Length: 254
Image (cartoon, rainbow, N blue to C red; front, side):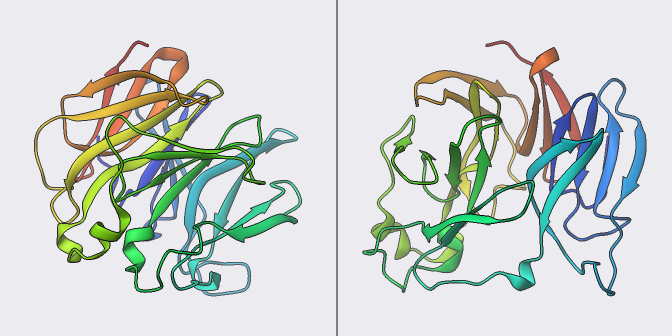
């Protein structure tokens, strides 16, 4: 199965939602998880009021009166704070900002390269907890909005941010490229490949599974070099996307 221009995807109910950041043939396509058949597309690219030239999507959604509501953001409206990232927490139903703080500690120098601080964040489905994968550091961070819960987990010793900051961009190692969460588990895709080569590399990859207390649960071996994934817990399937945009399905058990 191939989806042109796909950047990420997720499973909701019995549907696979494919997100395409380029907006080519709409920003989203929907497929059946039963037979991977194409069903629908939505959210067209445009230039008028209420339309988007480009969007960012972090798998944040909720159900309201039988409708599926997706949160998307416009990258052109976001601000960069040198040497840090501003973490803003909003009520997903009203859009009201409930808290805002700098994500990193004050000793992070402004000279840190911007790509080095790239990350993905996913929220616990029911609790006020977040899991974060900073792409170029081999750890997953778990925290609450007030930071009263705040710890890191990893299967390996953590990387030194100051030593890594001195490397040229092509030498950055991409560790946890993406993550998906459920009420019980955090699934993180571990690549451990150079950033400029990871999407073209061959060989196996791993999914590292943790619980929300930070305990390591298992490692799931993936036979292909997938770069993004989605988890269908009900039927124990992992959907994996390779760099050439081929989509595969794997059976797993925990």
